[in-house]
Amino acid sequence: YLWLAAVVSFAGDWFNTIASVILVNRYLDSTTAVGLLFIARALPPFLLGPIAGVFADRFDRKTVLIVTDLSRAVVLLGFLLVNSTERAWLIYALTITQFVISAFFEPARAAILPSLVKGHDELLLANTLSGITWSAMLALGAALGGIVTGLFGVATAIIIDSLSFVASAALIWRIQRVRRPAPAEPEASGFRDLIDGFRYVSHHPRTALTTTVKGLTQIGSPDIMIAVYAAQVFPYGKDGALALGLLYAAAGLGAIIGPLLANRLHHGAMRALQNSIGAGFVIVAVGWLIFGWAPSLPIAIAAMLVRHMGGSINWTYSNVILQLRVPDRFLGRVFALDFALFTLAMSLSVWISGQVLDNTAVTPRQLALLLGVGSLLPLIPWQWLNRNDPMRRTAVNERVEVS
Image (cartoon, rainbow, N blue to C red; front, side):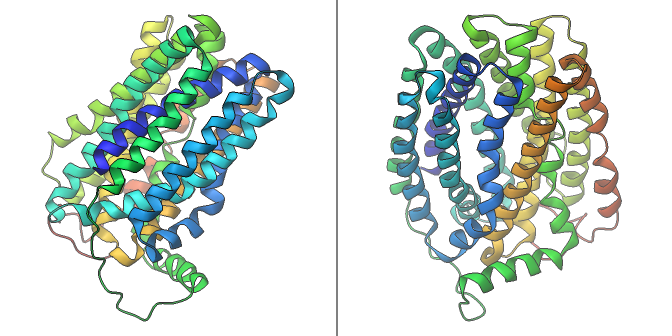
């Protein structure tokens, strides 16, 4: 049921993404304005991540998931009020509210997953399936979102997204409650929980490094680059909606292919997972370089597919590594930190990219080439710190709690 819930909510998410970008381009027409939209989506999880992690570790995770889904369904209907430049501020206010709620959903979803699989040998499969689902819904949802928004308007896309969260909540409600392991120590206050979570990460440097993988993969936000390419470089369809949908669809397809291909090349040993993440950084860089060179929309689509192959490998395998390393009582807080660092990196990348494109002579193509070079930099600390990891010979079905 968790998987089915993900299918419908992920698909709806991309209807909302397409609709929001179209609204910003329609009423504000600025790269910086698009950047601010993605910052509004990213900052709430960063600011609230530690608190959200405590919620995921202290309260029933199933209940957290249901409440957040239903709350987002209500908030999304507010986008129907945006029909003029004077009301464009609502796009940001509603987006912030939506992602404040989402900040509590993501850590709970990631933390509940290990308790729903039978043994740690299924973790790799479960995370791959989760990643593929997100990616497939990105491909399908973005393509359909672009088509539906272009044919039937923004309002239809918003209503579909709202209904998807209601359906997700109904499916999660059917999940059988899982008995959580009893804490080894007496239950502490919320603030003490927060401090304990930070202390755990600070004492486990390889775990700390793994929480940065998603963020380091965000050197160059694909969201703003896709939006800019659709609006300025390849403006196909009304307001660039067709190009926007196709580029997002390619990103989703690449994110499906990445983990599936990587899984066929190894048997889940920790060393293979870590080396695959290193390869993921390289693949991301190659995708950006092709994107910057692309003379036509089909080649830009192929480049975005390649870029997201690498990004999806890093997302999926960093999740598996954290679930193998981290005790259940800390999982919510560690995944909250993981997601917070990701959203911080995405916010910075979006803001810097928007400022560069709006206030300098750098073109979108030139920026994509620079991002390709920059995406290789995280490879150095990743390979260096993991070179002597005692878990490098540990298989996925052998959970060992080390740094």
